[in-house]
Amino acid sequence: MPKMNVESFNLDHRTVAAPFIRVADVKRLPHGDVLTKYDIRFTQPNIAHLETPAIHSIEHSFAELARNHSDHVVDFSPMGCQTGFYLILASEPDVPGVCTLVEETFTDMLELSQVPAANEVQCGWGAHHSLEGMKSAVGEMLAHRSEWETVSR
Image (cartoon, rainbow, N blue to C red; front, side, top):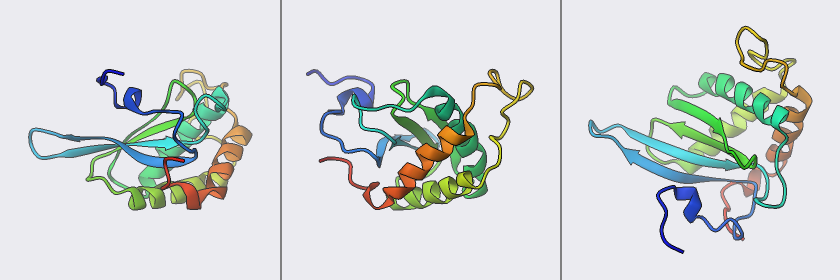
């Protein structure tokens, strides 16, 4: 297949073994700043996916709580395929360090009694959240922590 502009389109999704965390892209900006995009994959592509209320709650919770652990967080966004998220950090690639950041943030997320900003004032679809779905998905990821740095089968 021809090389595509979008990095994930060049990834053979049949050969990966979710859950995992991998460097998806590194951008070196003109003034020396570095942005690293991580693929945080929860479910096996083309086999399973996350439900949208859980995705929405993971997005809100991780985006809010990760910043308690790192000043380098730029963005945390869901994948359209509903199998994971992209985390962008203003830093050099560091998969072990990111695994620690994700583990600490996920641990915090399991302690939540409500999803941050899950209301009509702070969110465009405040009723579309699932605290239970978020905790289930994050708990399952944490149960497989030892596997996160292994991407391929």
